[in-house]
Each structure stands twice: as C-alpha cells, then as structure tokens.
Length: 260
Image (cartoon, rainbow, N blue to C red; front, side, top):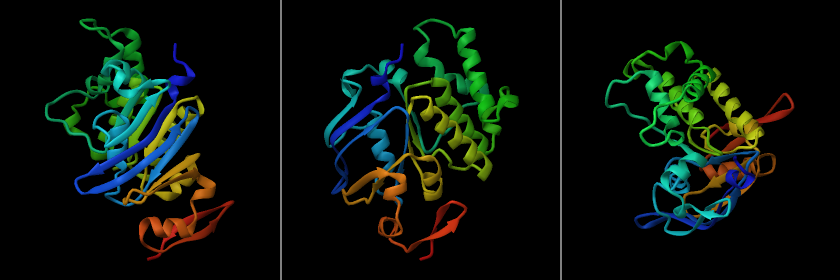
C-alpha cells in the first residue's frame, strides 16, 4: 500500500555542478504529495540535471535526497521505480516497436522477474494511451509517429508506471496548445489525487495556471522557491530570464509577456 511518505521527496544541501560551474547550490526543499511544482529558468541553468539528480541518475556534488524517510541511494532500482518516474526531455527509438509494447515498458517495475504481464498491466497501459489521445494507435510502429505523438506516448509510459512522484522534464515539448493543456491537466489531477509532481517548464503562464509552487534556477547556484502567485513577479522574472518581462491583465489574472 502506498503511504504518504512515499509521495514526499526531500533534498537538503543539494548541490548540482558541471565542470568549473555550480548550477544549484545547497538546495533545501521538499516536493510534497498533493502539489505540482514548476521548475523555471533559462536554457542551461540545470533544470534537467537537477531532475536527473533527484531521480538518482547522476550523483550530486553534495547533499542528501530522501523519499519519505529513506535515502535515495538505499533504494534498489526497482524500489525506486515503484515510487518515482522520470519523463526525460528527449526520447529516442532505435528499433521498431508498437505503441503498445512501448507504453508497456512503464509496467516493468510492477512485474516480477520471469513473469508475464497481467491483464491488469495491459489495462493500465491502454488506459494511459486513452488519456493522451493515442488509444487508436496502439498497433502503430513508434518510428511512424509524429514528434507530438511520440511525446504523448512518453507521457503515457510514465502514467503506466503509476509512481507516487513524477519528475517531468519539459512535458509539453513538441505538443500543440490543446495537448499542452491536456497533459498538464492530467498531472494537475495526479497532484490533486495526492501525488507529487515536479515539472520543468519554459512557459511561465502555464506555470501560473497549473503549479502550486515554483522553483526558480538562476544558473549561478542561486535558487528561489515559493507559491506561484507570490514568487512570479515581473521584476523577478526579468532577472531570471535576463530580458524585460511585463504583466498584461487577462480575465482575473495577469499574463507574463517577454518584451525585451
């Protein structure tokens, strides 16, 4: 049974570096179940590297990462995969495979060694395909999909994995406006159901609309986090993106526009 602690990802003093540069310095925060957090910042500030570090795919320069009360490095890869899923920024397919076979990869952590996928596993995969509007394409070769269709398939794969914590690296990549909204609504629903969702985004207005909290990365080690309605200001965003950002009134909120 999934517990509340399974949906909590905490880091303390987490430092992410590349040669001769500190991207994130001593990050201390908690990603909680019931919350969608957006990671914002310009290209090259370490958004992807931070998510990969939180997923245990690269070592941190310093600091601690815990899921619940367990250090990340104390969990086996299967134990970690049952709790946490990473949607990478890019997905490559080197061999032909059907859409259905590809989405079923997400069920691997749930299937015992040498066992076959169950009807429940197949139902979970088909449900995920329907959620991203690919239900009619399960027999298609992935190599024939458009960029947007392939991105939605990658989303379906992490939905099929059914973890407690979702780490999403630019989940709206290659998607048209309607599918951008559909995908973020799916993960907003996951957060509302008690999951923790962390998503790097380039669209500040989507972050305003869907995220409870934002983490801003400046690329020189500095970071700030806070509620979206408080931390997203024109002055702070102008500094973050090194270009003038203005707020334009729209309905009951403001839209942020980069005016240069």
